[in-house]
Image 1 (cartoon, rainbow, N blue to C red):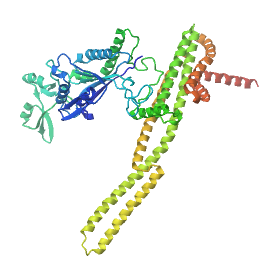
Image 2 (cartoon, rainbow, N blue to C red; image 1 turned 135 degrees about the vertical axis):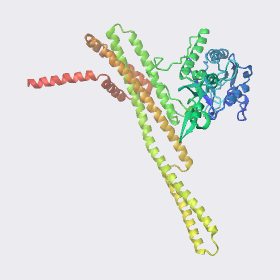
Image 3 (cartoon, one colour; image 1 turned 60 degrees about the vertical axis):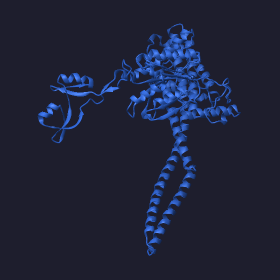
Image 4 (cartoon, helix red, strand yellow; image 1 turned 180 degrees about the vertical axis):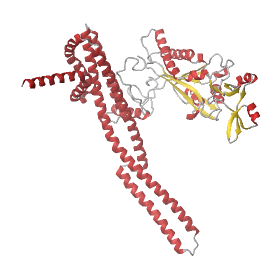
Length: 594
């Protein structure tokens, strides 16, 4: 299956961005933003392989020019926090040629964006794979300047779209209109400016605030005239948010994002069908794809990716895995990938086994043992990740204590030194104002200045001692340590969410297990139990083999055994309770006979 990626984001002024800058960067052009006068020159940017602007039918032809289009957008948006553009970023399947990729993007844009009234600015990027220093590398990981040796594995398209619809004459519509709350015969109704022209003829009046004693009350001009009231200002009464543009509201709906993601899936798969390829992409979540047993990997930021690239390079240069430093989140993702591989292989194996079931008893027995085996595997993975979580926690707690100690003492010293500095400044000023005859006062002031300077030096020495104790020689070391600690806390939290996801998966399987048990007729329970005893060894062996292959030398059979016991305590409590009752009754009977 090809890679699926389709994200939708808003470019807005509130984040300090501009649509002109975004368009210039994506198209590798030099554009000047007339809104603020800033020139955005990205002509040296490489790997932009195709650009195109597609217009809806009612858009001016001038908007085919990139500068004209986006400066028109900037000009019509007056607000400091205005939304300027909507950006679609889509991964282009490597299985398609560049011409086919362009055809897919254009079809998606015309069928779903320009057909709805948006102007779409397309740019296809195809950057080479790089190392952690952003240098292109070949398939062996070596830096190369030869374009024929570079790896182009991430073709993608950026589609910048306008967020404000146009009317039939190609003029930008309003995102919302002011609604005046008007009154007539005691009834209140909202009208836009254009609607009010007709409403005014029918007797509707706007409402304004008037002074009525100490209060400010809304009245129509005719009502206020009868009461001889004075108007507060010329601002009429309006609805809180005005009347939203229906097209804008439609585009901004969360449902549109899901719809657009599905439409991108359809556009790509239609192209695959057209060229008679069996490759497909899928916009659905793991759960919707029937892969709910798998856990999604965590997002890796730039720092983690660069750390992984450095480790890979060092291994290629001769270091062993034990000698390199990898990111915590990368280690977590590797664990998740191994878990997902284990889940897929285990599911495939049990699907194969279940397919051979000949009757109800055999099928139910195999299904129950397969679910039990999955739970054992999940329990083992949860135990391993929980152990890692505790190891991280053991590092984080003392680390946080040291950082807090340093921060507290640093703040205390800085506050005290600031007081001393202000005091020295005051004393120096007073010293300068002394006359030559005030010898005693001058001596006293000089003594006080010396004491404050001594206090500063003493505190600095004390802080150096704290820094040595905390093993943070400089303030920059403290800031770096705090930053690393914050990242570790983030990774720790993400690991916790991963563990929680595995637990949720186990809970779902447990529920399904118990529901399946309820479907077994009373007359078939013994037969199912006997068949399960026959299947259990094989199911457990499959789990053990998969876990052993996944974890290699770190595989722990004791953890597997404890996982079995823990799972059985959860999914078979009724059976264990029945056995306990049987034993109790036997003991009681024996005692009675004695």
